[in-house]
Figure (cartoon, rainbow, N blue to C red):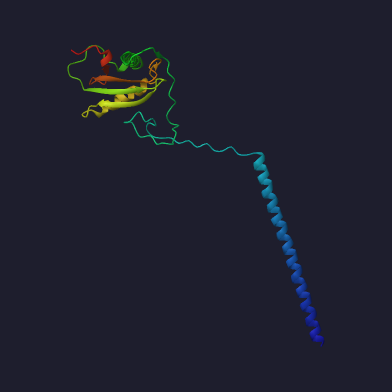
Amino acid sequence: MGYRVCLARFCARRCHAVKAYRAVRGLSLGLAHSGLRYQALTCASENLANPRQPTKRRSCLSGTAHASFTTAGVGFPGHKSCCIPPVPSPTHVSAAQHTDEYRRDAAKHIYQRLPERIYKGKLPPLLKAVVVVDIHIDTTGQVVVIDWVRVPKHSPDVTHDIEQAIRQSAPFPAPHYLKRVNFTETWLWHRSGRFQLNTLTEGQQ
């Protein structure tokens, strides 16, 4: 009888100790959870008070991003290039009222922008290439489209050089009366890399 009483008392004490341990452990977990929750709320309030500025991402494209320069590269729609400098605004305004008048203004403009590339004097009888190009200009003097009417298949480098010359000459005089203009120019290319435009040519020997 005494043995059973002692065993019952021992079991009661053990159960009481287990319950006490579980209660203390649950209280500790609750405090820890409350601490984490308080820390999370504190961080969130700090982020709301001092929001971070979004990181700006810039996409650089190789080649030209303008669709008008068809031989230099292919532009990707929806992307903006940060590698290509902004196109300057036109410094001259053309008062031409006809396409022929504007073609002459554009030829003079190219001669002024690229004086070192112009062939001086009469051209020799044989030229490296004769290239015919249609150039589309918008209201601000920017080149919109370049159409190659006649290209030298034996000298593809000439086509590239002419495109570079047109690009370097932009912006062209803004057509005040014509608004938008499309003119045709013939490039007379010497083997030295210099040229004359048919509009302002000095002729051939």
